[in-house]
Image 1: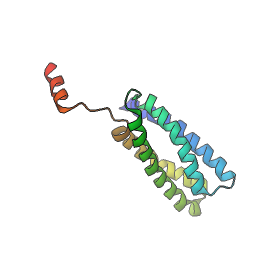
Image 2: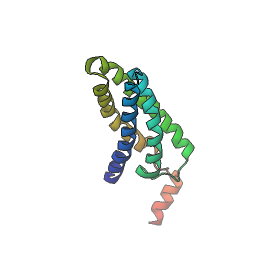
Image 3: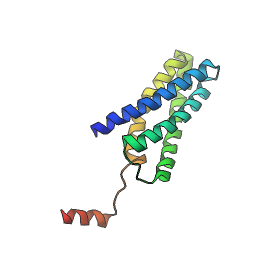
Image 4: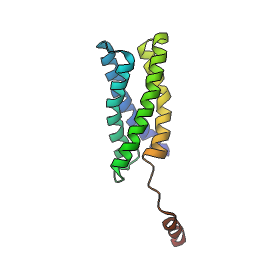
Length: 136
């Protein structure tokens, strides 16, 4: 699991850097912080999915469609949390500190949901698990 956490942080770091850079560009371009957050988070989600699927959780052989749907739901949930944080904290601390707070909150949430729901190894049916135990 330690290696997986480190790969998650590396992949997530790339996706987060994409998110942060796009967010800064959008805010600098006069886009409202919540809208900038939605746009940057959405684009970085594609980067995150590809890196997590092929490297972090090494599940490229699994059902991509099912993983993509679960990941999209995770992204919608994470984006909602992130945007709520940005919207709430921007008037108090400015758009960039608000974004840092949003990133901090969503990292742990994203790892747990990705590991246990989105890219979880496919479970064998009960009879196959029992037979595997008997063979040992």
